[in-house]
Structures are given as C-alpha cells and as structure tokens.
Length: 273
Image (cartoon, rainbow, N blue to C red; front, side):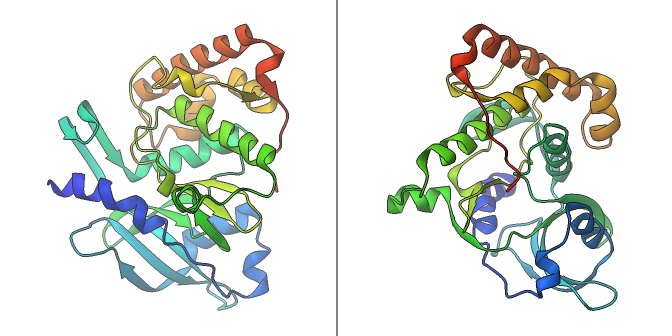
C-alpha cells in the first residue's frame, strides 16, 4: 500500500476521533471571524501526530496571545499530485490530494450560505503551508458510528434536510472521498462536513446524479448566483482556473436538474444553528 493510499484509508478515522473539549466559555462564544483569527495567530502549545505511518495530519492545541482562549485545530499539510493514482475506487487520472481544497471548500460553503464546515485557514507549519481547521466541540458521533449503532436522529426530517445539503455540495465540488467518517454530528444534531482534500476534480459532469434528490431553496439560489470572478476572488489561491471552470459546469447541471424537477424537489432549511 502506498503512503498516499494509506493516508486516504486512515485520515477520516483520525478526524472522526474528535472529542468534546472542556474549554473556557469565551472560546464557545467566538464568531466565525474570531475563530479564523485565532487559527491564524494563536500559539501552538503542543501537537499530537497521527498514528504511525500516517503523514500530514496533526491535532494541535493552541492558545491565544493573551492566554484567554485555548482550543485545538486539525492541521493538514498534504499537497500531492499524481498523473495516475490507483486506489480502492479504481484508477484516477490527474489525481490531487491537497490541504488547499480544505480551505476552498470552507470558503465556497460561506459563499453558499452553509454553516456546515468548520472555519479553516491557511497558515505555515514547520516550514510548509497547511490548512488549520477549527476542532469541533461537543461531537456526539460520526455518521458511520450512527449508522452502525442504528441511532435515530431526534428529528429525522431535519437530519434529512441537512444530509441533502451535503449531497448537493459534494456533487458541486466533485468530492471523491466523502464517507461516513468525515461527517460529524454534534450534540445538537447538527451535521458537519470535514476533510475535502480530494475534491474539486476537473470533471464537468456530476459524480453521482442519483444523489440529487432534493435541494434547499437558498442553496439553489446561491449556486445559481456563482460566477467565475467571485470564485476566483474567494477561492483563487487554492484552486486553479480549470477547477473553477469545472465547478461552474457542474453547477449548471445541478441547477438545470432542479429547475426541471420543479418545486416538489425543493425545501427550505437554514444551516445556521
């Protein structure tokens, strides 16, 4: 097994081990912008490496300059390219696995009005660029554990509404590595998406049309409004022009699909909880 394949197999398990932290009340009241600033500026106190044989993933404990806030972050430094990659899902041409896509996915989520991806920024670590992702508090379980233990959400309709957003988002970014281990559920039963290092492929078609069953109205409207200049401005440091072009082609297909499906395929839900 190659090192990059090994990382793919285990990385989600690492992120899925998120535990609730006993944090000062102030750290639980930060705005998104304050979380981003903390990730960019806080001092790294200690790090815990991923299991032996897994590279590029660290859990770092960080403290603000005034010492008032201590919190953890997930650090990814992977930035790999391969002309041809052979994995469990077959052969992929022009393979990429990069920390940059974690940041791009977060920023795209903001453009789409989604509060389902933890704040993620770019910062240097040990001489290389990396993504620093806010370590989620109060994680109840991941989706894999929920399914395995047959745990039912307290409100199935609300959970389904969140899951449908995940499915549309993953088709938009062509995420080839979504699995139940990188969908986290917090104690308020909010669904969170993490680990997007293998997204933003160059395909102009969606990966799985069958995943497009329902779409949240606000999400559809914000997808419709996306344009190349905005994406270049907000994501340009982390994705290429060709990747932006491919995203917009997929957007066109997704919007056309739901326009054809009509109101029966639409619903209203806010991810701000």
